[in-house]
Amino acid sequence: MKCSTEVGQMTNYDVIRQILREHSSRENALGITAISKIADDMGYKIGRNAIEGFMAKMMVKPYETEEECDELIEQFSADMREIYFCKIGLTGRRTRGYWMMEALSDSEWMYLIDNILYSKILTKKEADNLAKRVTLLAGRQLSAFTKYCERMNNQPYIVGDEDIDENVGHIESNVLKQVHLIREAINQGKKVKFNLCVYDYGDQKVRLVPYGKQGKVFPEIPEKYKKDVHRICSPFEIIYSNGRYYMLGADLETERNTYQKYKLYRVDLMQDVSVNRASAMKKKEAGIEELENLFKYRMENPYLYTGKVEKVRIRVDSDQFTQIVDWFSDNINVIKIGYTENGITYYDIEVEVNLNSFTFWVLQYSGCVEVLPNRNGDSSYRERIKMILKETLKKYEENEK
Image 1 (tube, helix red, strand yellow):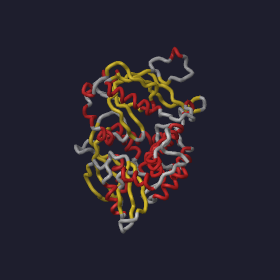
Image 2 (cartoon, rainbow, N blue to C red):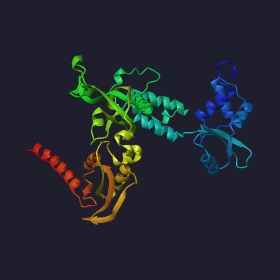
Image 3 (cartoon, rainbow, N blue to C red):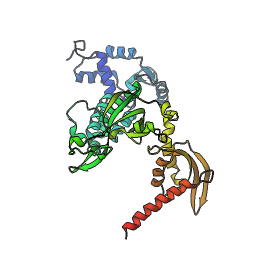
């Protein structure tokens, strides 16, 4: 039997906390006898006095009914790491059991793990390693009911995995490292240097290759031809959209243009990111102070593209109104509600959007969304969409001849 006071051993309080983290819950409050038995199985001798002393020090919250428990949980401050509860009998005398709630609930831990598992920026090995470490932080074996190990076998993003040693205890995502470097550059007011890449198929596999001024730069190209690959850019913001990180910034070409104030770069397509010694251009210098409201910017750009922001009117099938809210939140202007034509009910809606970005969205939902003339009767954007659809139809018709 271990003595909890020996050097290098956990104290009684450490053992009790670990037991409550890993074995207790609101549905499974542990009595003193149960806590003592689990401690005994772990090799520690912990009696009633030690357990009651721990609960007193932790200022355990007693409750009789589930309603009282809900009220106590509502008092949980966001800066509290954990809170201890004591479920007592209706007479207020007999203790039924203790349990601990951490700052994050099981469902919130599962939400974090699911986001890791289904991430678009993590490779299979990176996601697997990070999910395991988050599970350990959760304090109980969440993997038993999230089944993430089985899901990881189907993780689709494996480009770059061949360079990762999966036996290493801590694998940090390459994309997250680059996000950190870009944020450091923003904080220091410095430019960043990087290679912008694209996906290519070669050597019978999908691979990421740098894209320079002359196009793709393949590994098999002689070194002397690998010129003009590096890019230097003033970073303004990091934006997270549709599961990917983007760097919003200005390169030398953009700095000299008056019609294009910034560019967007996908961080997962960047390689060899480093903080440059040169001072970066400021947002004010670039004339893009309006991008301070990143949530508004995201709503205006269902897909992240640079371009002009305008108000656009659309007609949408009422059955698809949920799609509008999903993409643009409830910050929309509903002009006409629930009118019927040819047996179909419609909403007319006005949204403020980036036209280049919105075009891809409209084409995606072309079966249930129609662009209308704007409030001034201008149909130029409607005609632009019609032209794209005509060209698309022509491709299908030509291929059938």
